[in-house]
Length: 67
View (cartoon, one colour):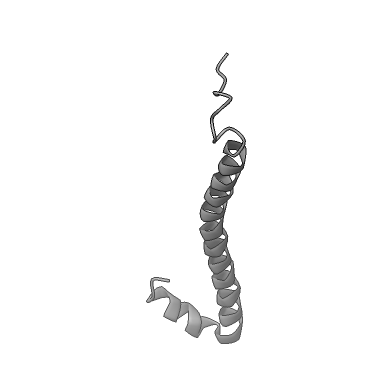
């Protein structure tokens, strides 16, 4: 089986290094997903409010916009 050299300076630090790399990858991947999801949810809530407030006028306006 593979084993590291007992004199290797990275042997005790390697699990910690891998943990911090993994945490960084998690934050970088998870952060934008939460932010985009939050924007989409907020947009939906706002559209419901505008449609209930302005009715047909807002539906006509929404047909002419892309977002």
